Length: 269
Image (cartoon, rainbow, N blue to C red; front, side):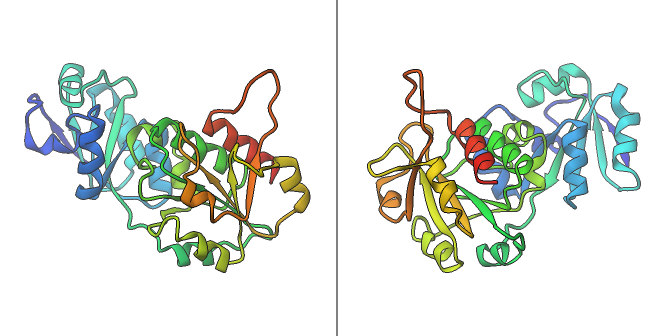
């Protein structure tokens, strides 16, 4: 690694890390710049294990030995700054010791991703228009833990590689295959052509229970989760093979989308 001790938060070499709390800015800047931010040694380690390449690392002096061990023989610039410079640069107090600007991998083509799934009863999740990065990260973590084969995200869904989503997922976003499904909701036809029964999690009219879906035991299953507020869009709902609901008790009408996904993934495992 190449150590660089920097004292000026305005140094242009640090631009990848600038204003990390400005979500609107980062949504545009990171994909356009071909990068994402991995925060904490554990998350960076998982990114490296997935074959992702670091552009640089930002850390404090006390963590440099740990960074050296993490990077191994990789020739990567490591910017060493004080806590004060880090906070001024990123917009928050950096407590996790290390973060890395990573090269964003090229997204897989939908047909290629689907062709790589070779489990006996494949399941995929589709995230339509989710806006909360915490929910996206939590869904990826559940998908990894409960054996979901892939995650597809609609064009309007929050970025799974945004810092908060990556952190909440504990880096599992690097181990679950995913891509954007650009033709949406028309892309449902691609899923159906690949043999998937397309089921939307909804409170809408004509919904069967999750237990009923499990009893039908579809050979290939695509589960769609809609936005946090309004759920699945009407134009998507019209294309579903099944509408599915999780029965509620105690006067509760629904679960948070991340919680609902975990229940659905477990039930259909």
